[in-house]
Amino acid sequence: MRIDEIYGVLYQVPTGKPLGLPKRHLGVFGVTRDSGKTTFVEAAVAASGMKAIVFRTKRGEIGFDNAKPLPLFFDERGLTHWKALEGLISATLEEKVHREPGVRYAIISVCKNPTPAKSLAEIHQRVKAKLKDPKLKEFIKEVFTKVDAYLEEVLPQLEKLRGNFSDRLELPEPGVYVEDLEGLGVKSDELQNLFVASLIRKAYEELSGVIIVVAEIWKFLPQDRGSPVKWVIEKYVREMGVVEGWLWLDAQDLRGVDKKHLRSFDVRLFGRQPDPHEIDEILKALPLPKQEKPKPEQIMTLKLGHFFAKLRDKVELTYVRPVWLPEEIAIRVAKGELEPDSEEVQKYKPAPKSRLQEDEEMYRPLYEKEKSRREELESEIPNLRTRIFNELKADFEKQIEEARQQAFREAMQKVEEIKKLWNIDEMQETIAKFKDETANLKLRLEKLQTDSEAVQKIREGLAQLLPNVPSTGAEISKERTMEVTHVEVLTKTIHSDEIEKLTTKTVIGKILWAAQKELPDKEWSEQEVSDAMVEWGWNISHSTLAPTLGGMVKDGALVRIQGRPARYRIPTKKKFEVEKEGSQ
Image 1 (cartoon, rainbow, N blue to C red):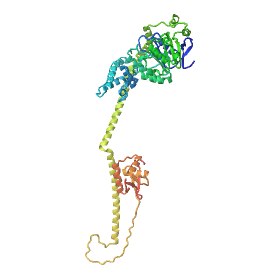
Image 2 (cartoon, rainbow, N blue to C red; image 1 turned 180 degrees about the vertical axis):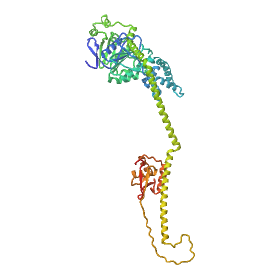
Image 3 (cartoon, rainbow, N blue to C red; image 1 turned 60 degrees about the vertical axis):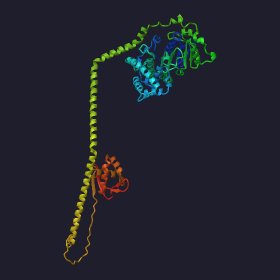
Image 4 (cartoon, rainbow, N blue to C red; image 1 turned 90 degrees about the horizontal axis):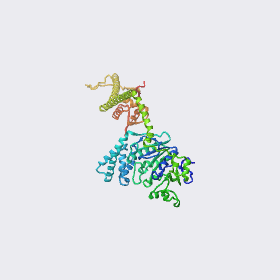
């Protein structure tokens, strides 16, 4: 036995030998009631031991009596993809619209522009907007008109069911779960397409180790037109095998099903089929030499539960053992010792349940769950008022805090606007500049005073040495004879190195500090000294820095080097001592 095969379902005819059913995507075809399709699917799912989801899409469907009911799952996000809308349009128009020029682009633009649509209602609004465009091509306008009419009909139906929707798909344990679309009010083919597509997409995104069974597959994979389900099934079939996710299809015949999507189904079972044209399709699908293929009359007369099974590379005539039939009896049927519908076989079949009894058993767990939930909610009512009050209080306090912070931000923004309006920063820099210039003028005045005192002392000394020399401007009334004695006057000049002290409170102090620390013994430009000051946290604007540098050149505090751009250096014979603010 192989671990990738299911046993206890198929038995070889006429030997009765058990056969393995490969775990693969699978399709089963045959006339309803006379072939046993549902019996096979029910038995194979039970024997697999895997989780399975089965759709019920029509009245009177039988089988899976013990299946667990699923809530009505629906999530329309995947249905807003342009491929889903294209399938929806194709299904509505009953033709492949993507063959018409410009239609696919129009569909994509409705779904994705200006942003990806989040709901069918949003797509509907965009379609209505497109219809108002006078430049819309006639054929595309016809397409959108029909889509508009379709959504006008479908969206109200969805709204009526929306209160019953669940956005969670949970399969807590192995077994069969049924999504009873017909029983839950999803009756039209258009709506069923949307719900089937939505659930398969969710399974593709979140589940593994699961079999999805779709009966009446011709409704969802039609041969001659699109459907919203097609692109979802294509992704599921192509990619879910690696996580043990399989799709099993059920249909009466092959002709109505899109062959493109059946290419990946390597396991197929063909039951009783009276239509000669359908038999031709079956014979083409069986990989046997012509002389070994079954004769048409064999397919026409297949007994209940008997199938020609294509099991990957081989073809076998098999009998399907119903889930309720003992294995030894199934082997006897396969050998031809018992007829599948004989009394000896049918006596093992449980009595059919009425629809009311079946619904009671199926929905009783859901009822009990909802009842328990209601009781739990009712028990919480006494604490509900306190909880709501506390939540409202916390929310109110949060809003107050947010309002306070917003008001503070707005006030600071106004302050910045006023500062910009009145040029506060520039005014402060100008004041600092004036302070620097005042200090420089004071230094120059003190120097002039010192120089003036020195000149006066020289004059006094000359007056003592030359007492008869008239003062400037005096008249000489008569000739005088003077004996001139040569006098050498020795003037001794004394220079002392004075150190000018500044602080970084001033712009000049900042410039000298940055030049001494960052640009020692070198020439530098205005930009370089500005960058150096930024490193110390001083951001001085050009309107302040440029005139200050010019004033320092005039005062002898800097030497300007000719060229473009102008460069500067600190005089080598002049001493400055700059104290950094806050360093004491």
